[in-house]
Length: 421
Image 1 (cartoon, rainbow, N blue to C red):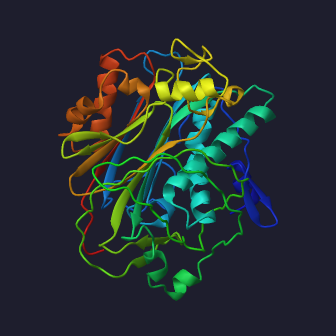
Image 2 (image 1 turned 90 degrees about the vertical axis):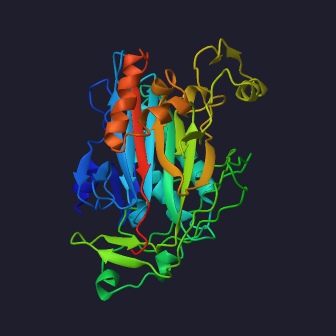
């Protein structure tokens, strides 16, 4: 890849290493811009917002509208087969306020920070990885505000979901065990040394099962992806959840596929489990449909919440009419650097192993949840098996019920993975 092409992506090339810069050229439009959605038959090559029409384990749909607002301050992002592992996925919605910049920037870069954290600390539990990612993104937005002399001062709430393929012990041993070929081994790769991130731990949540400590395995030491090198950011509270065990057959090995693009896709063994890690800051929400019942995987961080209000008053702030210092309705967000002492970026995280009863996931901003509750949303789209049509139905419901906010809805419908990969 040429240096000029990398620089166009906001990448600095130094001594053959790649560092993502904080700066990003924003359009003159006041509306947030998400990367355009493109469509592939199967292989997405890890390209942001490229969906796969024939993906074997999930399908997704995305719909958005600015509603009655003058401008659109929402953004979204997704990566199919995230980190080059078949069946993994990253999905996110960012709901901006006080401008589009934070949400737009997160839509372009949050997934890069997550990938970097996964590669830098491969043995760290995923909830802690997500916690570190939220803090790193939050710190980068604060630096961007500082470098802009306060011209970029917006913030955004965020809800993210990482669908991860794991062994029974929460590792990914199949990444190392998969057979390789001379073609695979000769592919261009990077193995940059990067510093470790540290994150704290906090309260735990159980959903229909026992809480357990998840340990991520060592990720592949070679990757064709560009690596970041960011500062470590100290931790904050996280939460964990896990669901019933999914029935699995036994299949001992994974395989590797090398595309004509030179990208290696790892196809995990069919006995792998699928674990959904959700994290949110603010009132953007994730809801899982399990056998027709809504299971909320996130936590609404609002000024009206007693626990959040106490945290803010203990820090020297106040909550007036449900707003932090009388200004902001949410108590956690990414960005909002002028209020960072009270409006923190620490996410709430859950961990849920998917089972046969799990049907689909809804990620959406409060523009949807202001006019429909979790169970109603699940019932509205449960019989709509096309994910894109389901997202459109949620969007139309919000608009027809006179939501006063922007609306973005992401629907991920789970399929039963093939038993013989």
